Image (cartoon, rainbow, N blue to C red):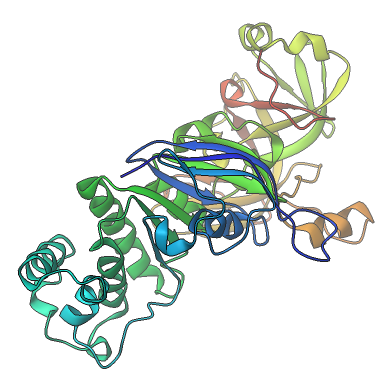
Length: 385
């Protein structure tokens, strides 16, 4: 196993006007499971491929262990990679697919058989060793592809959206399976996905990229509870955080024609008073919007219910508050909204399955004012001294 460090790594493709990856600084600890996540075209797969040696680094350094590997070919970097497609040999059995990297490396038969037995046990493939890939399910094929990569005992294990070809139910089971295997083997793992649920449930840390630039790298809980900027706040979480352009004045933030109070202790702690009378961006997660408002509640907001989505375990409610919610990670919609061509985007609340909210209803919901998020309107950075 080995650590990985990216030092001001940059990738500029021929003919491109902007870098695909720009000044990426990242330290990945030995044995860590880190996930790269971001919208399509953000540079996450490009960053992974530069670690693998499949993309030439334009600037900066990639260090694996104690070696700068910029000019070292992929086969000599002691890495293994699993892609979206399984790339198994259809004419070989599972056992032969697993041991192929060892056979071409000249490993003797006794060690080869021992390592196949070990990796098959770890990946729960023991009963499938004599089958061909065509006789396996999608999840089983993915485990074989992982086993073929891991059997070499690489220093670094790279995975590029390995679950994207699986159905939703199988992806859920494979997420926990991959996390279990990584923890058991302790191999340094870099995992690329566009699915933020995968990112938040699998990684020790998650790196969020946008436009080729690092936005934030942190444990999943930190990304969710303390997003470092507006992009991370709007990208991480499903449903997305409710974000709106506002002004902080006299201890409250504006929400259209309404005002939401900010706890004095919170305002003092984060230095919000320095923004008094200034434009800021405010956010609240759907989890922190409640349908139990009373006349004496703090953070009451009058809304018009637009859509009710009953999901069994919860009710997702879309409602109009008189101001449009900001959109993150949808350039086309953002451009249309800026030109006044797109409809207003409703706010969202996540309620209990017993909630009685109904479309067309006017009612009062409660924002948990202790869970508000504040961002500088110009820089987009979190306001938190």
